[in-house]
View 1 (cartoon, helix red, strand yellow):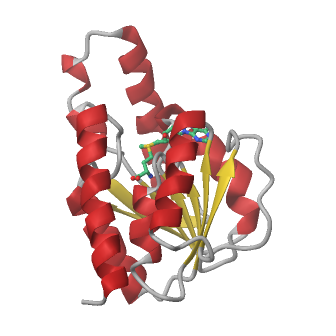
View 2 (spheres, rainbow, N blue to C red; view 1 turned 120 degrees about the horizontal axis):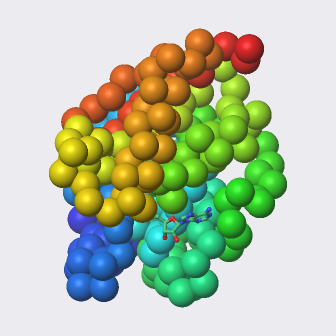
Length: 203
Ligand code: SAM
């Protein structure tokens, strides 16, 4: 292993530990490993990520393949600042562009092979609607946390009204992915539930 790769591996372990101690909701290991395999197999290059947190998944995705370029959007000040620091430590500034903005106000530029949605769960449909025009036919949308810690399958165990509302929105988004005629979607019981959708038509 090269010194650079050693530094990156150490950084990734440190980020995982930091996220655990400070309760930062980064992707589960099983989920990110699945995503990396998929990115490699499908020769994905341009990725737009919604929800950077501290830069963990952006760094992991960039390391899947030399050709990967990530634009990642985060609205939280402290997390964005940490992501900038982590991307610098990983020496990936030339392949990861961090955007400090609410994704619902962000004007993306260019086209992407993959839209990876991993931000506010209740807003998934809005994120998709906002960035759909940046996805050519044949590109993909990956949505994380669609099981929402098991609550989507067992809504009867939920007490809080806020949580119930959130689960209703995630369920509606899942239904949208399943029924929208422009998309073909597969659900995977990996990590906290991942959907991979492919855009097959514009209208
Ligand atoms: N993808 C990251 C990873 O696995 O390393 C984890 C992202 S975390 C689950 C979700 C992040 O989305 C949070 O840091 C949150 O601040 C951010 N977020 C939520 N809604 C957002 C929005 N509308 N625009 C930008 N960021 C948002």
